Image (cartoon, helix red, strand yellow):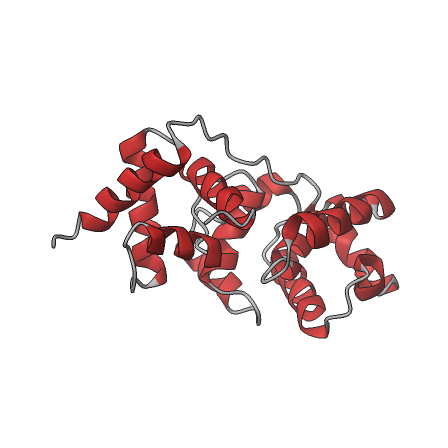
Length: 203
């Protein structure tokens, strides 16, 4: 087997299961409170039923939290667990940690965060927040329109269906990026198509 095999296997499987697309990437959020809470609360939850409705309610209830500064002002005055109707202290702490880090780095808007994530040192700084792993960093990129591959359990399951197993996070992400390039898709669009397919319980 060569190093190109995972890309080829994923490419063949995508065509067989999902067809030729197009696969538009999701738009993410412009509201920074939504970006931070989505990234902090979504892991291992049914997104469409559990997380997305809460994010939409948060945006409506906290319109002034569209910037990091506005979000932190709300956090200082109100309980995020109550606002999100989600009693998980670890995820609440992650949201606070991300907000504090971004504020310290001068990141206030979606556009700021989009540019800030260009730099490896900044992505590494995000990893220093408890609860933030490599998948969350890539996922945050998608939430602000960067079109990345965030490898989660659904993408791993799809890769396993294609015969691609045992790869570390970075290697599997690269394989998906290679498949996206081979098929002429945006990485974030392909990722979202795979995620949507597997999250619906597809075999």
